[in-house]
Amino acid sequence: MNTVRYLLGVVAANNLEVEQMDVKMAFLHGDLHEDIYMSQPTGFTATGGDHLVCRLKKSLYGLKQAPRMWYEKFDSHIRQLGYRRSNSDPCLYMKHRNEE
Image (cartoon, rainbow, N blue to C red):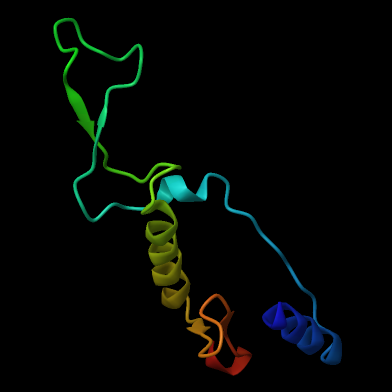
């Protein structure tokens, strides 16, 4: 909560604007770095293949790895855009205008 207060204080002091965004289905965009298998969903079993499994290529909601995989992907992308992560809060990214 301290980060939000700090951010809003900087915005108010400098007469800036704040924007918020939400990534729909964020956890589905994470790339897995390990092999994870699941049983076939109902309705997708092939004839005679009742005991086959599926290997996941992307993260799914409910996987304990899903939040971490999404964070890694977001962190990599936002850093490529020139943002730096705060030392005090790893969820706060900053970019100064003179760094563009």
